[in-house]
Image 1 (cartoon, rainbow, N blue to C red):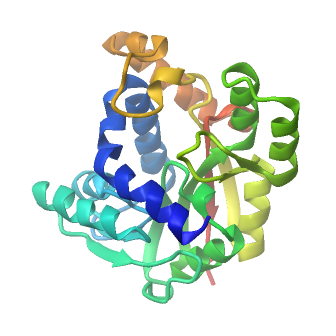
Image 2 (cartoon, rainbow, N blue to C red):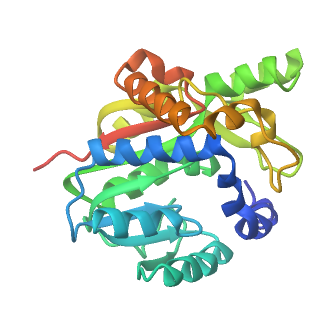
Length: 277
């Protein structure tokens, strides 16, 4: 992704991204992520947590208020960090805000963080995932863990076949390049298989503890993408019922315990650990 593409996409995105979560499907996805964080990161009050590609700061608010973490929000987009400053101040949370590029990021000190989280496909925007993984390994303390999300190759292919009407040439290009073009205004994004994520993490020095699908049972409808919404998807309508929402979350958490379900995920969440010395 060129700098111009980055700026063109993220400048307006920073202003409306919070509206995406008005759709109940994305609220379900959020609750799944929160429970995976609780179960697999074991963050204690005062722990240093890096929100890599933390954007508007909404997750920093949760890490600080719910888990008691000391949070650093690292993002390449200055507009995103400006939004994060407003969002966190309104919630009486004071994270460290760092403008940096994860491909190198000398602004982030070595072996500083007890845990790293990167949500909703930040890895898919990277030009050089291997370099970013080396950065994350460098800044994580020995024994620290991370949960890192990317867009899923299998979901991208299924979406192009079943929803978007992708032609044979496009599908072939996706398989060959492991990239997807979701819309004219969206940059070309990397998509990963579970095995692909495992390989890039292992090469950076991480131990891979697992891969989860987020979400692997519920699938968003076409109306759930883009904002403002022109309609409500069938799945988001059903998820407005609290009992249905709780059952769907129960199913997603059960699926997360089954490694073979990961490839069904809309996104993939990689669970890594930096070996202790």
